[in-house]
Image (cartoon, rainbow over the protein chains, first blue to last red):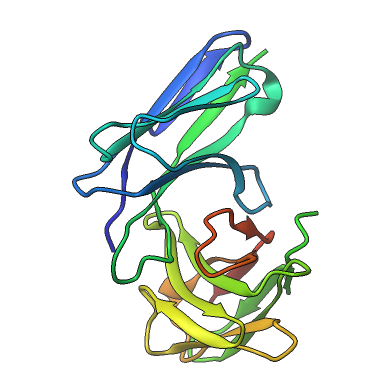
Length: 113
Length: 113
């Protein structure tokens, strides 16, 4: 199945730094979501975006739905050690088979105290 | 605790065998989704059930099957197992069949030897 192109694959940052990651696709999505996965756990929903151009915040997290509907980015401000994990973008496409999500391969974030 | 319960947490089995993974959705959720997570393929959608009926099918092999029972719990059956089937299998649930706010369980780690 198609996957989203998520970058970077991994990041090592200093505590307190801002982080930015993004997802692109050759296809249009109606919904973009960002999940975080920690070791031994399932992905946890962070932010959901439903309209092109939408900018949504959740605490130190900010995500945007690209106006072309083919991309999204996630920013984390003032990173802290508990931000460590793998961040996944996911898109949902309208039409046949519209209920499942297509996931990116993830961005592994490491925060150095 | 996400409210989605998956059992067992770990499973080790031999090639050619058959296993059953079980999922209890969050209370009140009617929709159940199964995903496979492997290192090289990322999170891949397998199948979705809504209130006992199959709703959508993704990259699910013919050797795999699933069902959702009247009490809404779901089982994923994997047969004629191959080494390449080793992966994390996640179940997720949501209230409706178009709600994108999935809640994931902690997964079942399957190792085929």
